[in-house]
Image 1: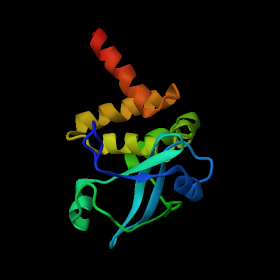
Image 2 (image 1 turned 120 degrees about the vertical axis):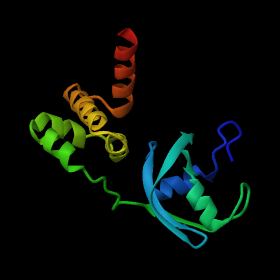
Image 3 (image 1 turned 90 degrees about the vertical axis):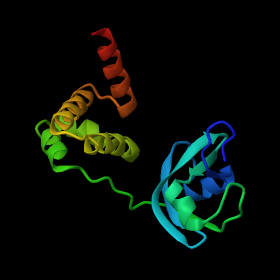
Image 4 (image 1 turned 45 degrees about the horizontal axis):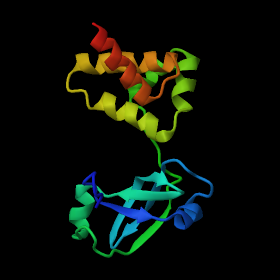
Length: 159
């Protein structure tokens, strides 16, 4: 468990991460098994010096019935099949201009997923349309998700 974060995670030393995806210093998706629990599409997060962590969601911790510090049997491989499905409305909007779709598709899978999850979690149609519009504006200016959120927050604070 992280001392300051409260996260539960598995440390992945640099030599193991290098075996999974050589020379990679950024987050990437993995699949595998923790004890008898199969998973896919989980992100390995870099923590420096080539080391990574595999954060464990509550559902996984519950299924494996292990607490912080417990020993687990772990098998990992890069999840090369990890895909992000575009919602129809987002795809239609992005397809209106080649540049918008190109900018979206050149984002990492995880950043595309941030946009998609953010749009899909809208509780009302009005909010969804607003988020679609903000996403299109972000693609017009070639922004990633974090930059878009910070830019919109700054705009809202100026009003």
